[in-house]
Length: 414
Image (tube, rainbow, N blue to C red):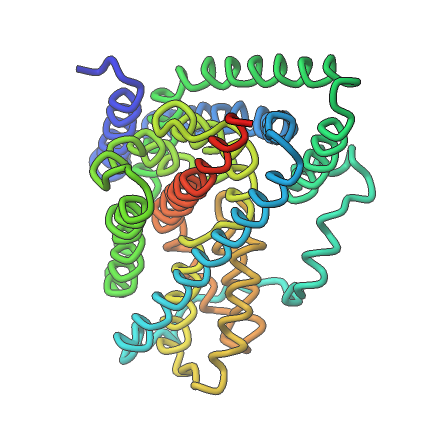
């Protein structure tokens, strides 16, 4: 029954959450359970996520270089890059406008008085400009880019190196072979680490169950249900049927193939940490071309943030209404542009959406006390929005791969 990794991950997730909840509500007075055991679980969970994160940067770099080298020609690289980038942008914008429409219709937070909330200051941060985001793609120091895990910079260097290797053709066959070997090694390393996933996921969920204060959510249940409802709609309805509409893959099959990916992303709440699982879901389960997956997955983990877009949009409307400062129609164009930039800049790490909401709270002149509310609810929402982000990556790349099939066949015929 529990031979598949997905089943074992789900078992670890369920046992961890249930036992953690038991500690919080039944065994909280016993220091060994509420203190020592939670600390051990936190340490194990952190070690597991660190093991994944340790492999992410080299995996991204090697897989992109391999992906570019395995393209039939450099013209297909330009076509694939433009198509993937464009689809990701469309996906993010659709999510923003859908969440915006729902927020305008339902007006979350209206009638709720949150002005008596606790104090929690946030650091004033300027809204990143589009030009600043573009300029930052090119690293000044490649070593620093690798050390900091700046995905956009790593992607840029990998694309540049892969393109140069591809352009040199037969003169650098050894370099291509070396990267292909490195890619096989990275995938094997990921496979080894993934066998520890049930333990790591269980530890993470144990800590969550033992420390999550359910009472915090009571006064804002409508807001929570609205965000989670939209995210789940995107995961289980919008993305599967979009894939069914544009590819031969049925919606039910797509949902089945992404189960492991959803469970893993729920526990880590990190798009970057889920990159290896997303890569395996695409190449092994959905049979997406390795070049498409190798190029698109790291890029998607950085900029394809449909879940974050929904989260930021609904959250800022709720906060504005709850604190008596409703957003006017005149503010909407600037708000949409800001949400788009912040979604792209949120990164694939846990809590990225919360940080960007903090930036937006400051930029719009909303009370800084609102950030306390966002922080209290973020961990639960972050889990589901990460699943939405990574399933969105899988859906977009499955569609992109389908559009590339005629070109792949034509190249094979030549």
